[in-house]
Image (cartoon, rainbow, N blue to C red; front, side, top):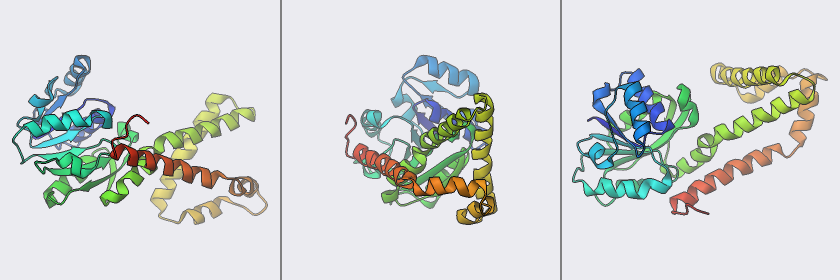
Length: 269
């Protein structure tokens, strides 16, 4: 097998769909392991990829391994990985906060950490990754292509990956909360909630697309919307005098700090 996915949850399925859609692998080149027989039956029926309830079976013979499990489950999976005598494997983990040194283990696997986010479910992930010193240029290219199958990806230093976790890994939840606040404000002004929702979703979608495609500084795009003495200026006077910048900053910092705690094995605080 060219790629074993340990864990068959939503993110693993997104990656499975991405690599098959980009034809990076044929279904027979993959194997998915999960503790849920029901989940495995679903994956096998939908993607025609081999499945197993045994991590050891999936790991044995795989050239590349994707660990798509929660940080709380990583120790047992790494223990299984280290029982096998296959140092040729390239191991990629998407478990938040788990450092490369732990992933590589005593056998010193070629290893990578990656942090995709949930827009991967529709092929629009923002992902970052880092590799250890044993990883080859081909390994780096492999991780990049794998992550690009579900969206956009960048390589960063490992010291920055927990910041990525706070910013873009957790970021969709924060953006969804902001969208909800916009919808509530629209409804509070008398708009039917379903229509407020449609307008807000497209406003966020269109604004992000415009920012990404224009290449212009955000300050210029803000100024473009803002007419002197107009409605946007009036609203900005409230927004920019508020504590919102500090609150957003503190939110992302706390998410990053939690990734640091997970790296120290503090799973239950």
